[in-house]
Every structure is written in structure tokens, then in C-alpha cells.
Image (tube, rainbow, N blue to C red; front, side, top):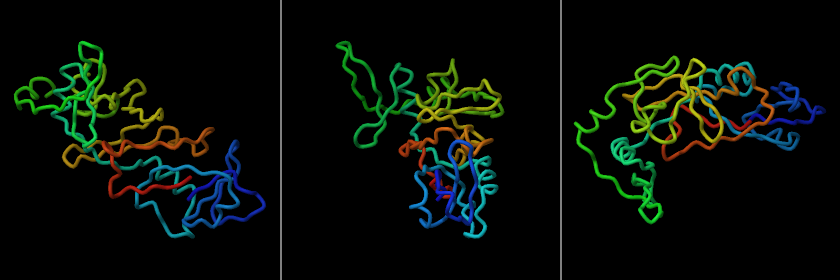
Length: 221
């Protein structure tokens, strides 16, 4: 746990000071919970979690720059089919992929999708694309002009020289994409260079789409 707005009268085994948030304290237990006013959660590699005496903000900052891993569990073929009909890929109550489409009467319904042929899928979106420093990107990511080849929640911004992904109004940078193992390594842009955010924000990942990988741990800040 890393907590902030901590009481300066207490001594902490590992602490740092941010201009706007006061003292940060980090502990693997709840020893300091009563002396700190607030906390929030981030994701770090499982390898970061060291012994108590080794906890330090230098280690934490390094871990945040290296990012964390999530798994990709989207059934891309039905979503490709949905996008070709100008629908929005989604999930119904049984977590089956369906297509949100508007009927002539104006009502929105989630229609189960059938599997297109391999030839159809290859014809639509077989060519990869580049974004910033990332090359050979495919579904679920997309950029303007490739809307039908991506998932609605995975639009990329390439304007800053790297691939940026927005999740719950927070910007993440794609550090690596492994399509063979369906692993994405992400890093929060607001923590890469500064561990003292003005307004700490919890970011719930879309667990049905991006479940935490086995090598990633949740860390409360």
C-alpha cells in the first residue's frame, strides 16, 4: 500500500513528499492506514513487490515506467462483422459478443453475430498499421480510417510519437503488444515522469476485455 496525505508527526519506513499531496507512505501492510487520509490503486508488475525493508519510491517509479501486463480476451471475428454493419461491438448478459445496432424505429438492440468467412476477414483488415513507435498493429486497435477493423474502445492516438490508449479518461501508452500470447504491456502516461499527480484517479480496467495478467499486481496508492 502507498498512502498519501499522511501525518508528518509519524515516522515511516518508506516515504516521500509531493508538493500538493503531502507525505506519501508505502507499506505492504496496513500499519499506516490510520495516519494517512487517502489512497488510490495502480497496477505494477508482480516482480515489483519486494521485501518490506526494500520498499522505495525509486523502485516504484522504475516499475511504473516499465508498465504492466494485461491479457486481451476479445472475440475479434464477430466484432469485425459488427463494425462492417456500422454497429458497435458489445456483450450481452451471457457475455456473448453481440452487435448494438439501431432499428428503423430508432430502438437499439444487441444482435448476436455470426462468424464471417476467413476470406471476408482477410479482405477487410489483413494489413497491419503503425502508430507512433509501435508497428504491425492489428485488431482490436484502430486509427482514423480503420474504424471497421478495430474495437470501439481501442482507438489509438499517434500524435505524440507513441501509441496512446484512453481508458476511463486516463491515457495509457502501449509499450509492447504480443499478438501470439495476447499480452499488452501498458504504462500510465501521468505516472511515467511524475509520481505526484495533482488529482489521483482510480482507473477500473475493462476486465471482460483486459483482465490483469498473471505477472501484474494491484498496488494501492
